Image 1 (cartoon, rainbow, N blue to C red):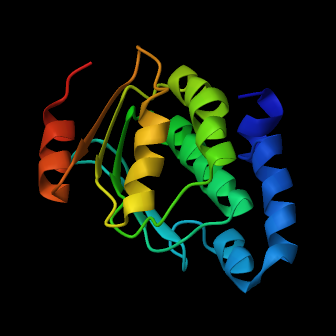
Image 2 (cartoon, one colour):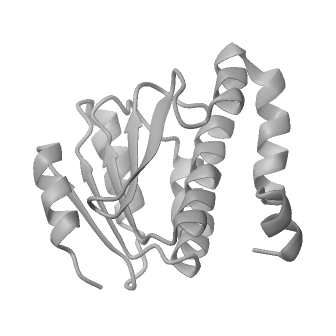
Image 3 (cartoon, rainbow, N blue to C red):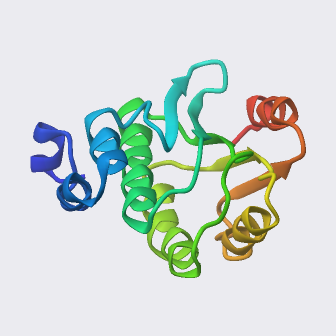
Length: 163
């Protein structure tokens, strides 16, 4: 994070995505207004893990998905945590380009910010499961990612994970 980002609290990528979202849709505007709880997802710090919890509520456009991931990255840095718990139950799909972006662009930056382990509850939809598997297939060796059938199992595994 640059000195300017530390002072202003936002990366350039986050600012650009925020600008795009403000004109995209009413859901995009709600996401910008309240990134931690909006129609697409909720995001919060859970000190019992310790890590960031993301609950997907519905489909996210490419811009929305990338904004959410940039916001998660900023929270990893802000709170100094290295774990993410995802409730992907309602995640219907992630487009191939976004899967590649998460794996090849976002994950290396998240790892540099301290991301070490992720656990999630598997999506209900077939295409959601294929999407999560697509991202997982490209996970760097320095990152441990597991997918579970039950969110409670994912949480427990993540709480016990040591790095």
